Length: 483
Image (cartoon, rainbow, N blue to C red; front, top):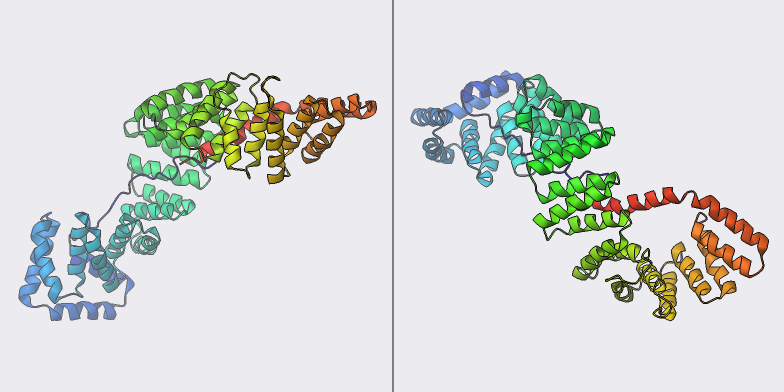
């Protein structure tokens, strides 16, 4: 199952390596990765092109920036850039000023140019990678941050941002390794520990994720921490602890996603009544939440409260008449209701008429009709719906079963054998179909055939509980993927 919250990464920790001692730092890393002659020639040409006065201005601007006076440094650097567009220090520092102010449109070309001018400068590659991350371009960020991490492997924030880039590009194992490298360099803050746990969980190491999460102090725990802790415990099979974490997330921050995640966790483990209560609370807070209403309906359905579930899905179908999911779930409930005091099941017929290729909807609509008392039942209408369903999908065993039931309701015992045999051919473990076919054979005097079908009915009826559990899992599966 794909978790509800796994795509919700924490805000990235933006790291801009400031220009403090920028000349020295650039010289150091340039010499480390370039030939001394090449690097020295490039720096020499830049120095020769700059006048003494302009060089003094640049030193003044860099000093202002280093001391936090970006607004004073900015106009000087802008003016110098016009005259010295290939100067690394001007491009890098002015790019950082724009980036720190949130103007990435202006910052990016400057940071790109600086990295091009000095590809061996770790600060340039790290800052360019960070800018790409901020602009949601992780594929471009990766080579920059990988290079920065190679040049300066002991920079914790570079390792952290590299890990985020791996997470954003769906490489959780590499992200986990980068987070591990960052953790080896010093303590991580709570948000970064959350992201490290996320990377471990997504790479299949739930036990490792739990160790990281357990180390987060209580003061640093948030609803996001509790939610990922809940998913981690779920993966480890610790269902009670998982539910506690999901409920704590909703307590800390009662948002619609958090409440919904709690409901889904309860549904996962067949806690129907608690799920209804939590869903009711969520709907009170977020009355327009379709998925909370659907989860409430699923809980009713699973708890055999079919009339209440039918009312939920009827309302959802009324609000969205073309939604096949709501029609399907409404049909499942209407097909199981033994009386006629239910509002909304008649809308199945309208849906089936409007969607003639939906075999399940037509079958459910016919089944609901067949549950009407004899004086109100419209057998002709039910038969037409079932024939429509069979034409739309000849592989649906339930359709033929209901045709057999209808034939027997009209005492057409011989006719009923054909659709019932078809239903069993499609689903050999269909216990109810075996029972109905046994009745038909008995009426036709085929005693041995009837006894065989009864034996099969008894055999497959023992598997009924497993099939019910499978059905419940099937109808709850779509909840976990609802946006």
